[in-house]
Length: 355
Image 1 (spheres, rainbow, N blue to C red):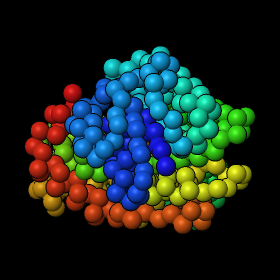
Image 2 (image 1 turned 135 degrees about the vertical axis):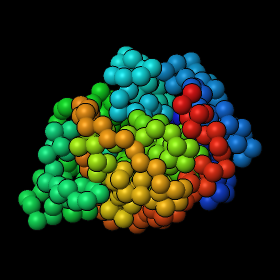
Image 3 (image 1 turned 60 degrees about the horizontal axis):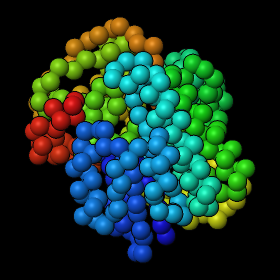
Image 4 (image 1 turned 180 degrees about the vertical axis):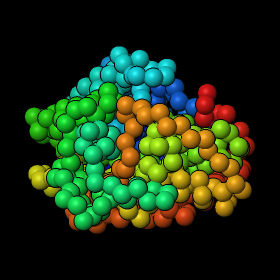
């Protein structure tokens, strides 16, 4: 089987490629990456050592895409992953649109031309911010907890957020580009007869991820705590109770493998996937884990609210488990320890991440 991975030199794309090569024989993986992100060049050398053909190119460029060899499947892992992209930071709103949505036409035309299937990596941030902010939550000592005795809105179960949860705006500029990408990809697949799978992913984390305050928060927090770099609990009273679930890209890769092997032509195409309740943790709990691992270090409290911040996101992966037998294999303890060991072995990681 031939697989093309866009954004292959990123943390997620490179991890998926390596996992699949270790699992399958006769697999040929090619990739394209613009090498803009910190660490991309390191990952490119590692992938080449594994026999992956990596093209330095921009998926916004039709000519760059036209030079790529045919594939049976495309895994689209190329995007600006920060919810603040286009609003704050180096990326403008126009660049966000070009990278996350405008470039998708080249991916889809490639799939159409070569009869390739598409696996689109989407985000938990496609969901309505007002709906997420108004979830029935209880504030416990160190985390927000879903009040399962309350009436839960559509798409929310005690296990977390499913694909039927509200996507009504506002969802952030970033979230809107990912949601629009889902719709366009599904329409292309329907119109031109190629399979499309969409996976709305929770927080992906693991050793080797370049973390910043806006993305890769678990990696950033561990590295910053280890180096005694200033940390802040922002919003929600400055207590660090906000909760996210985390899972490793190699666990995601096992789902993608099952989806690409599935011959089903109809039915559900959009799935939520993440660490779930078992891998959900607040920033306060993460700090306590880091205190035990590295010694005490207290983040500052910043009570200022930011427009895109949300208190609780845990993904319900029930549908993926039912349809593909998928389950998360990497527990929280292993995930955090893997990142902690990497932080200890790479003392300059925080500085390199912030480039």
